[in-house]
Image (tube, rainbow, N blue to C red):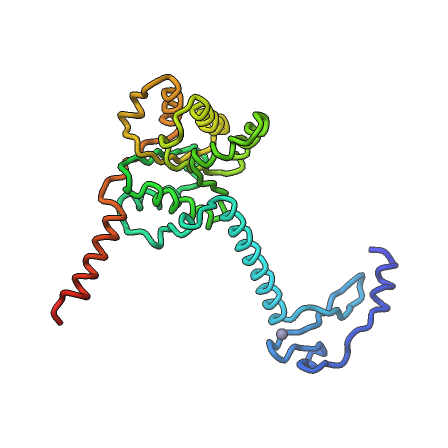
Length: 279
Ligand SMILES: [Zn+2]
């Protein structure tokens, strides 16, 4: 402490009269009428007792509430930006656990999200395979949305879209584009196997998968291909893609009693209930 600071403190005007909403307490300090805690305090500085302004309890709580509100708004904005960057297709954004029927597949997906820290640390990928319409994309989108809600950067896209975008790029740009996927803690590639079967396309698909492999970050892939098709590829170009995928992603079969049928059933039940029940 130096004397300049004390001079400054000595020159400070101490509030002696209560303002509206305040009163003078028995201890000579000014109090807040609302919370009955002082807006002043006594501090001893270099042997001299000084009355200094301080924040009463209700003001303190109000400031904390405001700070918390700002924090929540910032988090909301952050999640909104993450979602916009991570899932461009509107309908996928609406596929969440809240809209899901509780099947073993959904429970597995929920555990994937709950254990995300371990999943990420151990780089646990999934290969969701099963027939068309089994809800593999739905499952993947549920995982994506739940992780995005938690503030985890996720990108959900598909090979066709990536290849379309890469079509117009120079090779250096292409490399940067593929490398940019590393910004996302989780990459979800929907529908492996429906992309064009050209040598160029297969080369890019391999590059995307291999880049993820090198980054050591988790990958979720959905596919209509069977495990036997993945294990017995038709040629070398497919073989190296599938073997990388199987190395990174644990196959999880998504069984056929699917979401679309489930929705159909409910509709049927509704029709039965509304139009045919005798009441
Ligand atoms: Zn107060």
